[in-house]
Image (cartoon, rainbow, N blue to C red; front, side, top):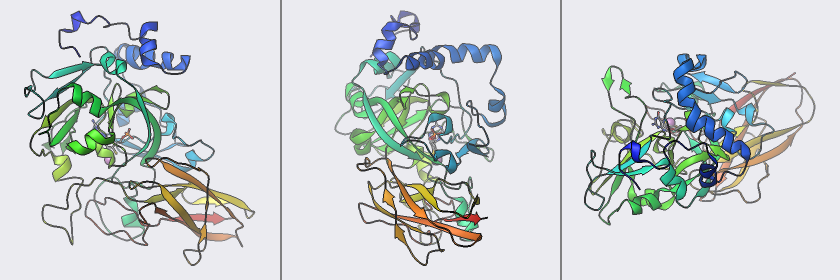
Length: 420
Ligand SMILES: Nc1nc2c(c(=O)[nH]1)N[C@H]1C(S)=C(S)[C@@H](COP(=O)(O)O)O[C@H]1N2
Ligand SMILES: [Mo]
């Protein structure tokens, strides 16, 4: 923990040297190379070359090849066929991106995590916070968590295409989800070192990306309160993703990973965390990320927390398949924990068969891969359905309860396929 001026930093410019590599402890040399690209060179290169062409249009830095992504404004949705033949994890090159504004390039050498507020001993103020450098975090005990991050609006497009309902927001199909192995420091460790008190109630992590302007109204930087209990339980300050440093689009140098909860909780490009002895509010837990509409109070439901049960086929949307035997592949996941089983229907929901789960011991925060042989009948149009049930008994209904912002579409998706 250090709070002096940047000139005093003993490790200020050496993030690319071998001592730092020791700190980072990524298993491969490639990790070292990518660390230098991520932490040291990106800022300099981008200053010299300007953002890559893709960034100019979308605000996203990584390439978005059309075979991997569907563009969605400032966001990029993963095509589910891009998971076919992949291992358990979603590689970073195809992990969906949800940006309220644009990916900022943050220099890890000058970056600080700032903690402040009435829930810390001595109540440090925003202008005199407790500070951690990137290296401070690398020196603390590291942990790895395999967890999905899923946008609360994932599958929102099906409210309209499957249920005929108008909702506002990005019309994602099922590709606003990915599973990665996140490496970092437990948020609890850092909160304790910062002097969290027993009176702390809520924290408010805030990103370093630009202020978000919604229809002409400036809502400030992306920030979303998190109850202290969840913060202390399993939230991670992540600096690694799938064995490499966190890439720019996913929050470099450090993001929060809040397993099983709505993606908005996992604040990217983390800059500061307010810790308060009273409940905190921001537009991201009042006007967004609650359920609004029939059956909900005027101010909306309680803020959304856990994600619901979903399933997806690793097939192109509207796939064309030859008339021969196939093995259908897919994945199911739930914010409530492990998937118990997934059933598949190839006849529009009349009959169901249980898929074979391919992961014997999937963690409670990830997904499970499954497969099922299918001998399609005559050429024509088919609808494939997958329905998972999790360890709490929660399953996927035929229709999702309507809400105006189109969150938590957990109904069974009818996946169109043409047999030729
Ligand atoms: N600072 C910041 N953090 C953010 C966001 C953002 O726009 N800015 N988007 C959130 C939302 S809505 C989601 S779903 C996840 C997406 O994470 P990913 O882009 O790494 O897939 O990041 C969350 N964290
Ligand atoms: Mo999201």
